[in-house]
Amino acid sequence: MPTLSPPPLLNQSPYQTYVYSYPHKTAYLPFPVRSLADIWSPEKRDALFLYIHVPFCEMRCGFCNLFTTVNHHDEFVNQYVNTVQRQAERVKTALGAVQFARFALGGGTPTQLSIAALETILNVAEDTMGANLKNIPISVEVSPETATAEKLRLLRDRHVDRISIGVQSFVDQEVLATQRRQTSTQVQAALTRIRDLGFPTLNLDLIYGLPGQTVDTWLHSIRTALQFQPEEIYLYPLYVRPLTGLGLTDREWDDVRLQCYRAGRALLHAEGYTQISMRMFRANYTATTSGPVYCCQADGMVGLGCGARSYTRSLHYSNEYAVNAKEVRHILEHYVTREDADFDIASYGFELHREEQQRRFLLLSLLSNEGLSLTSYRDRFHTEPLADFPPLQQLLDWHLASQRADLLLLTEAGIERSDAIGPWLFSHQVHSLMTQYALK
Ligand SMILES: C[S@@+](CC[C@H](N)C(=O)[O-])C[C@H]1O[C@@H](n2cnc3c(N)ncnc32)[C@H](O)[C@@H]1O
Ligand code: SF4
Image 1 (cartoon, helix red, strand yellow):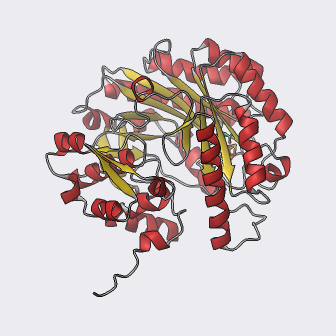
Image 2: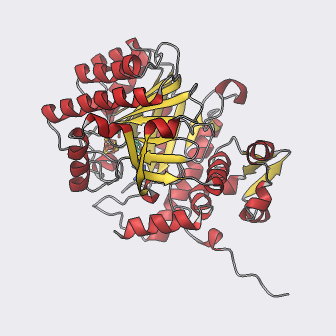
Image 3: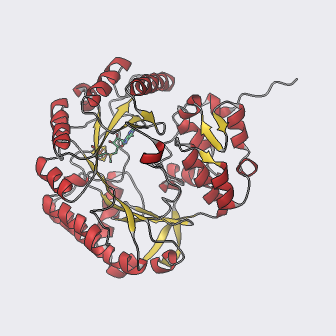
């Protein structure tokens, strides 16, 4: 028997790319102008997701590759908030009658805004877009330094029920090595403020693979986080090496990250948390009460703000994207000077033909504990998932996925390789667009 060459998926680093959506923004391209009214008219609009993006931060963390800037002053921030208001008015007119089922305010750091600006943004969601803030889940991202008692109280008064805070680590040296300004004492004070105000859901972000971090210091950070009984914890593997470097080879860095992941996961399991995806853990989870984390129908997302994306079933669109400080600034300056009528149209993004819609459905459900329901796939696309995507059979053969009745689920070995399995399932077109973007 000839020996089969080892599958590359199993040989490569488990840390290829974080698939939190598909396709990634770096696969977006300019397309012929389309009106939003035309884009949205065939869509169901009774349970959309509203997202508003605030691209300002008090510091630029060495590891962060999000669309955000630290280079801002009050006048510019006010101009940005006014532009979000102008955009919302045009978008709402284009959408016509809509209902929002969820609202999220993300960044950057939304609480970098002043109280007055935060109020304006919440009013945009409620009054201009018509989101019923009293009755829908609302999530806001905060950083420890900007999560002041006054801002948190405003958020609680406006019915925000989930606060997501970037902590990264409770070890000061580890945080400082990433050029992030914060002490463990400040973080713990912010967490106490959040808990005292009674937000139903606290989510805490931690990062492993940081300079100087060991499995022991990593577990110390998780244990400290657990003292605040967060309903959710995200464990992020570090992706961008901070400027100071790690003094490790790539292989050693992979090993450290894998050890931290396994130790963190074991600790959270022992503490009663359920793993929802490679990064996300939830306390008191029951599938029936908690609902799916990724509902494939998150395909109805309306994004406002410069860095926000919008999704229909067949079109994803946004502004242009960048990480580099100068480019971000340039895109932001362009955003705030757009004419009102410019917000009636979209001209940059990605059109999802049938095969890409299938891929998106399969990727996002397989990478969460929801799993890929073969029946849901068939009902939606009228074809067989394993016939459409032969690599799924390979995942089963390599014990990275298993089949349980109607569900295809990643195994433990599969979950820890989510960041390699995800990109391995991307289409050639998306791969090649992302590669071309990275080379620019
Ligand atoms: C929008 S931020 C959270 C809110 C706030 N800006 C803060 O940092 O406190 C989203 C999260 O993504 C994670 N993150 C960002 N870039 C990362 C990277 N390169 N590697 C790992 N995690 C990263 C961090 O845990 C961060 O808290
Ligand atoms: S991690 Fe948060 S605070 Fe730091 S630069 Fe990124 S978005 Fe801003």
